[in-house]
Length: 171
Image 1 (cartoon, one colour):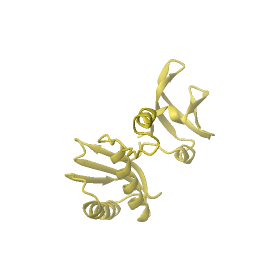
Image 2 (tube, helix red, strand yellow):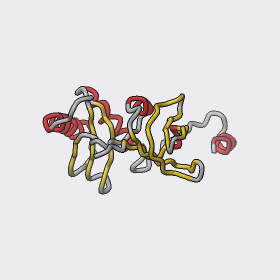
Image 3 (cartoon, helix red, strand yellow):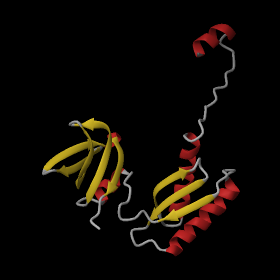
Image 4 (tube, helix red, strand yellow):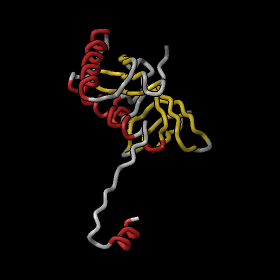
């Protein structure tokens, strides 16, 4: 593109390259970054963030290393709601804030070390040994890979290959 424009308009041409934003991708990444900043300012960790029903419902899962109670959820909900209504023009109907639960999602590489020794379920993007779903004991990380003990065998899964990962507690 640049080469064609250069030949047509010469070396003194001015170009404006706009970033094409597809609804749901870049905007939601920016929204998640803002929400993570707000949650962190209050002393919590953003475990997960999702939008439901075309973005009308925002779900935020928080943790603080201790039990999350209703006061924690209310505090985060009020703060996030106030900032989103003032700082953005994002229109949503409902904001839900809760704890991640016992079967919490694991998205960050350092969380795979944090929950070492616990049962986990992992779904991969690409098959490993003709499988995409694994259940086992989390053994931690090795570089950019996750170590998991499955059927008494150690398995290494590249972090980038993980589609979903959740703790798998015994209830």
